[in-house]
Image (cartoon, rainbow, N blue to C red; front, side, top):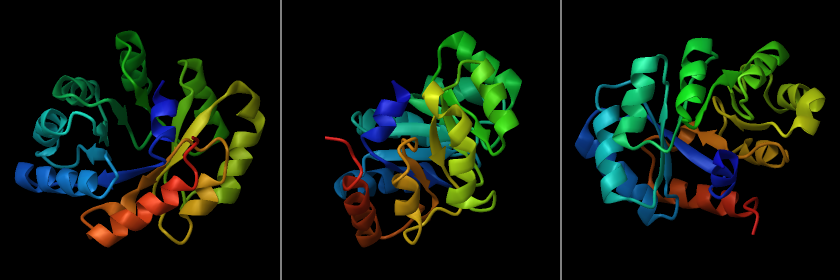
Length: 203
């Protein structure tokens, strides 16, 4: 189950990568420092090749695709080896295709209406985006409240950083956060993220 896999890492680095070489180097760095997970965004032409090659070189890495905006990119991502895919918004056409094909895809929401639309498709794992711009932790808690009994889980992304990440991870319905601050960072920053995540990973 996707939410359970996310629960095992708690912090998923969100990466914008320009070349295959850069992407493989970053994935190696993440694995070396104890954070074998990444959301590789389809904002660059290199994304598909990075997912394909990194999935082969680092088979135990939990690699997903981000910024999946259409059905074509949805299939490109999973054909390349992505274990999950996310979007910055809610596109019924893309969600419907993912459901039909049994792909682990979760759309972004920032209002109760979008939560309900996603749930109509059977989605129980949702991205809360852009988290801080939409009201942060107070807004997320307010959105969760009416749907908590239905088992919906969230991954807040956008403006999440070391100063506020734990306030998100303390929410039981947050499976993981999208670590936008981990894009092309140093080893020490990754190790600090691993230490934070470890506090919230269920044993």
